[in-house]
Length: 274
Image (spheres, rainbow, N blue to C red):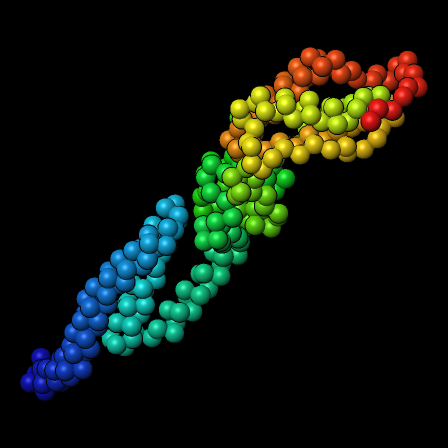
């Protein structure tokens, strides 16, 4: 190798060092400082979610997602300083994101719905709810699904997308849930008398709340009897046990006060009570 070639390569190395090394040093500095800032920002973000009582199921995911997003921004900034063409990187990321989003569009809609449920909290764990036409107690709220336990001890896994798209009925929001029962009364009986008998029976059921007060009224007149609506309130956790206890108390009270019921077979025309 002659002296002229050595001089050529030497000049090239010097030019490269003068041009590239400062950019490399600047990129490294940006990465070091940027990652330090990302750590501080994610810690601040995590603290903000904790103070806002954000769901413990989704908060770590959001913090991790934010940290990754911030680090990608730092790395792209460093790549731009070095001279790497970032527009092509953005194009590749956009294409990959579109492909993944299209393939997982159902899961992504459930994910987005899960985030909304965590933020707006239309129900919480332990609430009695009706969602997507299903009734039960909320056992878990996860990113993609809500878990309900039915009164029959069945576990229902409902996609959050379907929860958001449908009506949500929260029976626990007010701290009480109304039991909706119907009992029949023969036309010959006195309604004020039967109403007081039912009220007295409800007072013997410890699960029935004093406030709101039970509601009792005539719902409609049927061919052989009068249909009464009995509407006591209980705590959401006592819903099913309350139904059984109220039925039991009302039946016992009808027996003790000799309040009869009408049967469709062999019915006779009789008087109408007060």
